[in-house]
Image 1 (cartoon, rainbow, N blue to C red):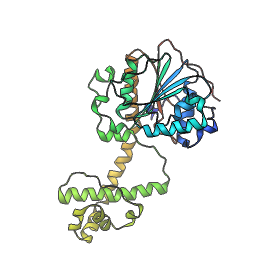
Image 2 (cartoon, one colour):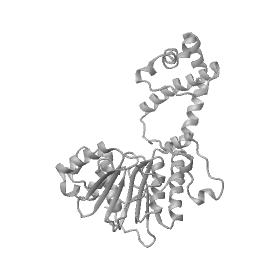
Image 3 (cartoon, rainbow, N blue to C red):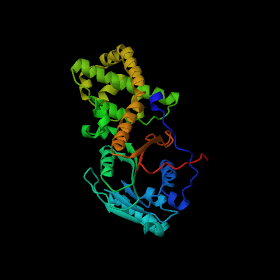
Image 4 (cartoon, rainbow, N blue to C red):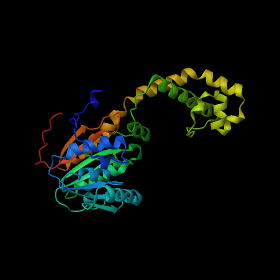
Amino acid sequence: KELTVFAKNSNCDFEIPQFLKRKLSLKKQHEIKNIYHQLIDYPIDNFIDIGSGAGHLSSILLHDNQKTSTCLDLDTNYQQIGIKKLKREAPGILERMSFKQVHVNEDFSLPHIMNSALLGLHACGNLSIDLLKTFSKSSCSYLLNYGCCYHKLTNDHINISRSANDTPPLILSNHALTMAAKSYKKLSLKEFDQRKDVKDRRYSLHLFMQEKRQQGFETLGNAVKSDYQLNFSQYAKKYHPMAKDYNNAELDDFFNAKQVHVQEIQMLGIIRSHLARVVELYLILDRALFLQEQGFQVDVCETFDMAISPRNISLFARPNDVAMPLKKNI
C-alpha cells in the first residue's frame, strides 16, 4: 500500500459551461474539469490534443481565453460530431480549433507552435509511449499524459527508461499488464458473491477440460447472468462442446469434488489483485524516469477520483526552468 500512495491534485472548483456539457458523460466532465485545473496556470498558448475525438477536452480548455488547439484523431466521424456541435453551440471556440485525421506513432512530427502542450487523455496502449518519445524530440513545452489499456502494450514499449534497464528489467506478462488495467470498482457483498458464482463454474470447467481432455486454458466467451443459476453440468455443456461427451452426474460430481481447489484459486486471485496498482505505477514511473532522463521536470500525481476514473494518475512534464504554480485547496 505504501508503494501506491501519491500526491493528490488540489480540489477543483471549476465548472464546465452548460452549453459544453451536452452529451458529455459525468466521467468525462470530471476528467476535463481536473485537467483544466492542472493546466490553467501554465503559460500555454496552444494544445495538441491526441485522440481528441469530438474535441470535448480542447473546447473546454479554450472556452474562456484566446488559446488554440490542434485536434488529432483517426476517426473522422467523431470529429464531424464535434464540429457540428461547436458550430451550433460555440462557433467562436471552433474558429480556434483545427481538426486533422492522422495516425500518431513514434515517428509522427508534431506541429511547431510555440508554448504548446501535448495532451493524451487515456492514450491507449503503445500510444502513450509514442507520445512521450515524440514529445522528447519536439518543440512542445509541456506534456500531460494519462495512460490506459496496458494489456495492449508490446514489449518494446515497456521498460523504456535507462533506469529500468541498468539492471535486468522487470518482465511483465500480458496477464500482469491486464491486471494493471483493473477498474478497482468497489463491490457490494451481493456483487462479490455473484462474481464468485461465475468463477466457481468457469474455473471448474477449465480444470475439467485440463484433467479430462489435457487441454490448455481457453476462453469461454461471455455468459448471461441466468447461466450461473444452472447446474454445473448444464453450464458446462452450454459453454464447451466437449463437455457433452460426459453425463450430468460425472460433471456435477467433478464440480463438487473440486470446490476446495477452486476456492484456493479464488483466494490467490484476491491476493494477486492487490499487486495491480503496483504494476500500473511501475509502468508510469518508468515513463516518468524516461522523461526525466531527457531533461524534463516530471510530476506524477493522482488527479481523478478513482471511483469515477480508475486510470487517474497523471504524468506531467515541463521544462526545467518552469516552476509548478502554487494552488490552494478550495
